[in-house]
Amino acid sequence: AQTVTQSQPEMSVQEAETVTLSCTYDTSESDYYLFWYKQPPSRQMILVIRQEAYKQQNATENRFSVNFQKAAKSFSLKISDSQLGDAAMYFCASEDNNNDMRFGAGTRLTVKP
Amino acid sequence: DVKVTQSSRYLVKRTGEKVFLECVQDMDHENMFWYRQDPGLGLRLIYFSYDVKMKEKGDIPEGYSVSREKKERFSLILESASTNQTSMYLCASRGTGGFGNTIYFGEGSWLTVV
Image (cartoon, rainbow over all chains, first blue to last red; front, side, top):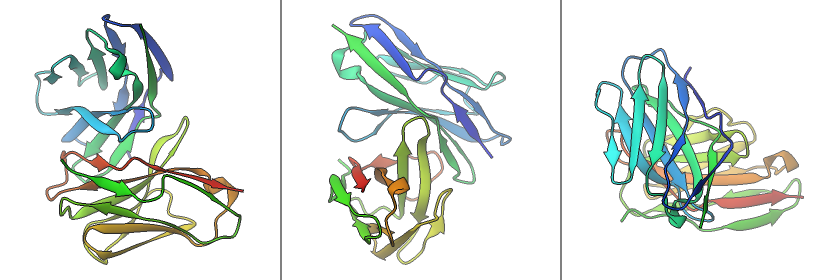
């Protein structure tokens, strides 16, 4: 079975600065996807970024990018130029090709003005 | 935009009551899910459905059942609510193809059992 670990329950960042959220995972599958989801306070959880394990190039979506280290089973999320609207709970998730999706415990990000 | 709507955002129920949590999606998605979210535990899958009248148990199905009579609607049922079922419940949906596709979530239903 897969496991996903987020070791940082809470993080904070100053507005306009950069923050990195950590995630490690464990899977025995060779084909899998990794995700970061964002859950703003009292709002719907939305997909931030997605990475397929076969792709070596790190995924990027505007100010959001990942550092995918396959051998180390690490999948960190970097948020550049942090904005107040980035404040949320962030969940790392892993899905294998049996459609088994696992979520980490989440990291609560605070953005300070 | 995909919309997943959970009709009840905040509920307070008594121990032993039967509780229905309703979820509707508007994108004709085949796959629908019910998760439970607890602090420090992340999201845990209760049940999912890949078609009308079809259902599969997730990781924590005990004390729950589900119903999917129409493609757009997926209901979570607590047959006899208990205090350890106090939690936030998230409904989600996803289209055909599954693996790697985006999952769309509802806003969540906060359930308190007293």
